[in-house]
Image (cartoon, rainbow, N blue to C red):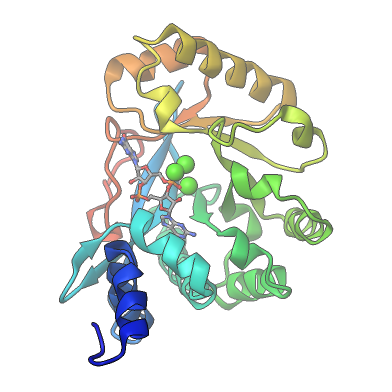
Length: 277
Ligand code: C2E
Ligand code: CA
Ligand code: CA
Ligand code: CA
């Protein structure tokens, strides 16, 4: 990528890290991926730990590119956020999620109180017309607001601003739930929790996965469970991979869970034809 005969340019280019070159290549593909229909959504069941009923699902984006192959969201979402591409991409996710939700609800395959969780980036949430376009999307697909929960990461919640608080308040007044995602991984003080409106807490898989073997993590999970009881909101434990962890969390009083033990994220065509997993 070096131009010839220009010493300055050579120096400049050799300073670019390999990662950035990869990013530039990825960004080029990313920008055309919407038009090329390269994105699709997978859905992972969220389970009530007491009844083991499926109460909802989290929808997760996938990207399959001809040259790059499958690219995980952990790789391209940050790039999409940095470049603003997350705004049209996030709108596509919401629209597509609502379209598929609407089919499952109207066919009766999913109960009328089913909650679909959709991840929303801070960049997307901070758009001035976010709540307006959210409700417009629901209306377009004839979806009741109680069928949707938006997941916002704890770290993005900490960058609290007036606009963010107002948006969250508008969203909740309209009947859409708000879940705090990756709770516990933001190393935050708890001080913001009392001003923040939310309906669900989700505890990160890093704490959940070794709740049986790491007594410090057990203490953290136990504290978050008590916190959720105090706030009177359900807690979803992420990353449950074994029966033992599921049973332990249930015994500790955690209401809901999600993880490979119950089901992997899957396209809706593979969604189990059952209520329990
Ligand atoms: P997240 O929101 O914390 O999503 C949970 C991640 O844990 C997902 O990774 C899921 O596939 C994975 N997971 C579920 N069960 C298990 C388990 O039992 N064990 C393990 N080890 N992992 C499990 P995924 O799909 O790769 O997504 C990664 C992150 O990318 C998400 O983390 C979320 O922050 C972001 N993301 C995904 N889809 C979207 C989207 O549509 N919009 C936005 N803004 N972000 C998204
Ligand atoms: Ca999430
Ligand atoms: Ca999470
Ligand atoms: Ca995460």
